[in-house]
Amino acid sequence: MSEQQPESFIRSSARIYLRLLGYVKTYWVAFAISILGFTIFASSQPAMAWMLKYFVDGLTEGSDALFFGIPLLWGFPLFIIAVAFYQGVGSYLGNYFLAKVSLSVVHDLRTNLFNNLLTLPNRYLDNHNSGHLVSRITFNTTMVTGAATDAIKVVFREGMTVIFLFGYLLWMNWKLTLVLMAILPVIGLMVTSASKKFRKQSKKIQTAMGDVTHVSSETITGYRVVRSFGGEEYERERFNTASEANRDRGLKMTRTGAVFTPSLQLVTYSAMAVVMFLVLFLRGDATAGDLVSYITAAGLLPKPIRQLSEVSANIQKGIAAAENIFEQLDEEPEVDHGTVERERVEGRVEVRNLSFSYPGTDKQVLEDINFTVEPGQMVALVGRSGSGKSTLASLIPRFYHHAAGKILIDGVDVEDYRLRNLRKHIALVTQHVTLFNDSIARNIAYGDLADAPREAIEAAAEAAYASEFIGKLPKGLDTLVGENGVLLSGGQRQRLAIARALLKDAPILILDEATSALDTESERHIQAALDRVMQGRTTLVIAHRLSTIEKADVIMVMDQGRIVEQGSHAELLARNGYYARLHSMQFQDETTSA
Ligand code: ATP
Ligand code: MG
Image (cartoon, rainbow, N blue to C red; front, top):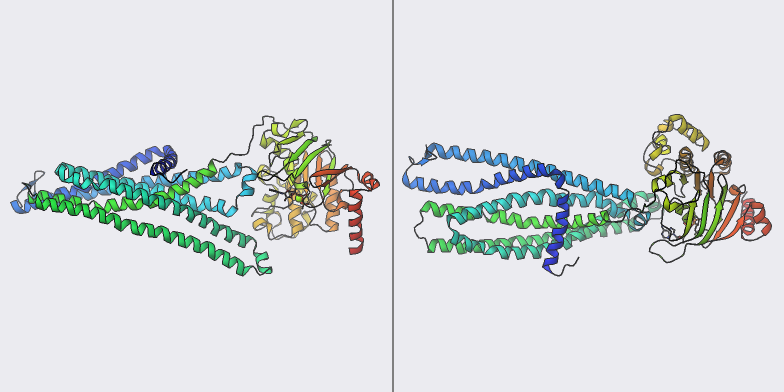
């Protein structure tokens, strides 16, 4: 998109606006009614000027002159009321139905945007900050309302008014009117140049608004860190800068408009002045009524022209917002070319020559990984922080696309499964527990599990060793947990996440540091529960505390993206290598800290 040449600017505006209007198509009936309404409204505009001709001529001829066959004395007032009524009906139809269209379009855009967010790849969400994504949904869509409601309203209502007035003027005296029309190209040029500025400034305002949202949400969610590390001053500064940038950019935009409107008025009135001069100078054989009527109609022009030109700011705001919205809508959704669907897999997981680096980075996070897990086996991943354990786990449900190597579930490449079906077979407890601001029961029975019977939820909570603390809460399973579960302890949140995974009853269970926040006793209990639920399902456990994974069928030790050792606990200890070193270090820690 280049902004150098006016043609390409106009073309890009038109392209975005047309796409926006594509959303209007669904509501074309309401749209047509509203246009009819505004046409009715606008067509009444020259009526007053037209009447003046009879009024002035009537004054000179006497009040027994006829108007529509009725004496002027009665006909005139009646006509005024009729015109007001006619105009009122037009105004109602236009305003109401256009609002209906534009609010529906904004609703559609907003839901499209949100639904699109649900389909975007993890990479997109990793790389975009949530403040800007949120502000796109809340702020940018309302900017589009500006373009969709107010702008279309003004464009139609005032645009029609100008057309009708010009029509009337041409009919009255086309030569004079052509002089008046000479200003139109000048106005066009002025509007285009101002529009460019409006668009640029509006984009900056959006970014600044995103920053405001971003800083506030970060501070609100991280308030504990802010308070304990004395970050108040820093956050205050940061917020002030973002908000000030927003104010300054808004002010700049207003200044552009504030210079633009009077300049335009100057041009319009200059043209009027020329016409006035010509009227007085070449009076010809027109009656006083004709002249008054002409001048009145011409005098009605500057207001709609001013409103039309002012609307370009709104339109540009809307276009800039729509452009930003369409950018997201045009993002490729998560790739899902898979066709395989299985009711239930056995759970054999094979990883072949798998290498991976995060999109947009060139650091190899995983290098040539090979292993096989038989159905029902428990495999543990251990290794230093940053060695790639969570990354490996996240590739199994295809959170990221891997270019090199293969991951097979029951002999079928994960890429060949339909995405939703693939994820159905995997229950995942992530390293950072996510809870929703809802009741405990609804947090356990989330998503596809929403219809789970109460007993199943209770059983899952029991198995995750969560029943004990849930029973002590004021409303039990129906207690609300607060945003991301702030009203619970770290260990309680982990137990809910485990209960959620157990309720899913999937053949493949992945636990990423799922017990790290638990005390030794709870962990032992959960371990017992997990031993039970691990029966008949493939389990991948990632753990720092080696005591939790001693029973694993296979322990894989990772270092810098490679599997450096692999075997059972006893085998690895006997080998006296990497694992044995890790183990003795932890063992020492535990004995000294105990
Ligand atoms: P820990 O034990 O601390 O949880 P880990 O073994 O799970 O560590 P990973 O989370 O897999 O480690 O990270 C491996 C590497 O990948 C790290 O160097 C990290 O910087 C990088 N990394 C992790 N997530 C992303 C991401 N979304 N985008 C880019 N790089 C990432
Ligand atoms: Mg991790």
